[in-house]
Length: 217
Ligand SMILES: C[S@@+](CC[C@H](N)C(=O)[O-])C[C@H]1O[C@@H](n2cnc3c(N)ncnc32)[C@H](O)[C@@H]1O
Image 1 (tube, rainbow, N blue to C red):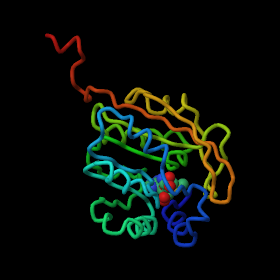
Image 2 (spheres, rainbow, N blue to C red):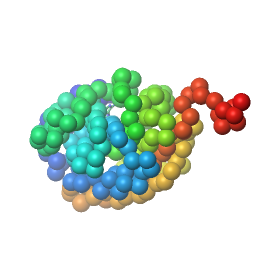
Image 3 (cartoon, helix red, strand yellow):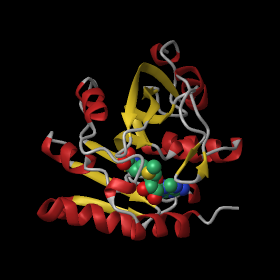
Image 4 (cartoon, rainbow, N blue to C red):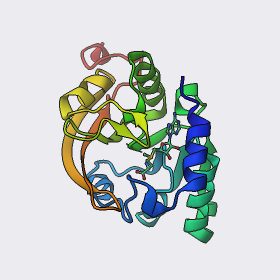
């Protein structure tokens, strides 16, 4: 059993950005997919946000409420320092996404390179249930994982690689696939890594509400 918190605390306490394989100076593809969302999210959660600059970019794009959730306090501290004054506008949550944390509803749930650490069905079900409870009807997920040709491990931990179909299947039926994209990420030391991004939409009806044919009664 992996002690995720100790693992990630240690990673961020001992490695510079240049030593983190997933480091990207700008989350270009995430932002490009964000710009295509309809409706535009007013609130967003970055799950396993790490030291990513995404939170600041989303605030700059007009998202009113931005939350970063990460199991590592040292990742959160690093991200806060990088954002400077802007950090005060972000909600920070040190938490394990698998521990079913209590989360406010959001229009956008973003995850780059955290979901792929979930290697068994129970973990995936717990994650999807939390996302289903948290994302507003009509809201979106952007999930990015290693693709079929990507590495089998990330930060020394085993990962589940995905293609678009397996991502869509993991989140169905609560979410439906809207679009997908591929990216060849270059690690800071120049090694290519295949990523797959899926944009999924939460079904419009909230659970328990009546379907279109019922609503005319
Ligand atoms: C590979 S890094 C990706 C960081 C960031 N999303 C990015 O794209 O730069 C994975 C991140 O997920 C966090 N993480 C891993 N497992 C987690 C879990 N169960 N709950 C919350 N955060 C987790 C780690 O601390 C780390 O910051």
